[in-house]
Image 1 (cartoon, one colour):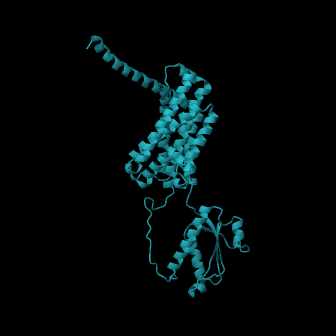
Image 2 (spheres, rainbow, N blue to C red):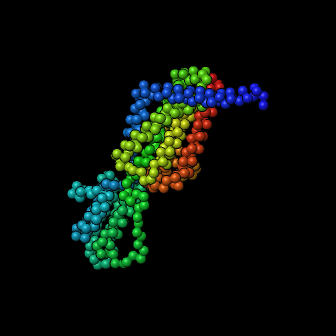
Image 3 (cartoon, rainbow, N blue to C red):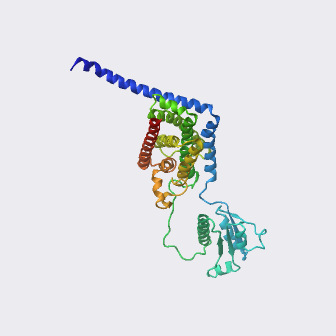
Length: 393
């Protein structure tokens, strides 16, 4: 081997190491610059920490899928011990609130529902107890407000189940049941809605606010003209994206830690399996959120358009196409196809597994893989757009 080749080999290796060191140095410098700017902007600080906490509180307490405190009006024309026992059984479910008869004695049940004072009305006929004791069928009239279809279905099923239980408990149901289903709620026997809602709120918060902060920071560079200095420097598109992304990833991690701590204190949420899938899933999801914000930032012309894009493409998809409130199976085709590219869909599966199911990696590995793939696609798209802008300038 020639002597020149022996001398050049170490230099090439050393140059590659030096180049990598310089790239990392530029990325960290860009990260420090972003964090310094972030600390000086009080409005951005509020957007990063106060609004996510308010969103957690509002969504965690306001969103309820199980109807409770439903105003129910009972008109008892029988006024017998049996009819009073049936009325007490209806309200013993703790799902209905009684409407006082004295206040609406002169009105019919339909008028009370029409005026919005009650969501349902039960009319007990005068011969209620006598017909039941004679072994005959007594027709109880039930009127349900069908404005909210889901709520109407819940009221109907609850009154039917309560009536059936009342007859069985009073010894009035003569025929024996041939099939009895012993139902046990798995994973969440106490039917705590916070176990379903709050882990889903994690996905909405960590998708909206980190991406919004990143998009606004990127657009601000354009509006102030400082992006031209970046174009003229030796900083590459990848280094700029990684530097900004690293800064807001740190901020996103702080946000995630804070909302998880607040959730454990307010709703007593606890992990049901080891935390590694949740921690790694949160990190990957935050990276996806940052990459989404960078993509919006390099495409948007100003901060208003960036905010609108994040609200439309980020918030609405995370809220409606992720399975946060409504099952994905309820989304009609072809709109359901868009749910496959919504990262919040996969992160919700990870959070609900961590707090409810507890299956671990066996149940969420595919969701983790999809988050990684979507993050790479978002980063590549941001890099290509920014590189074209850098070349054009």
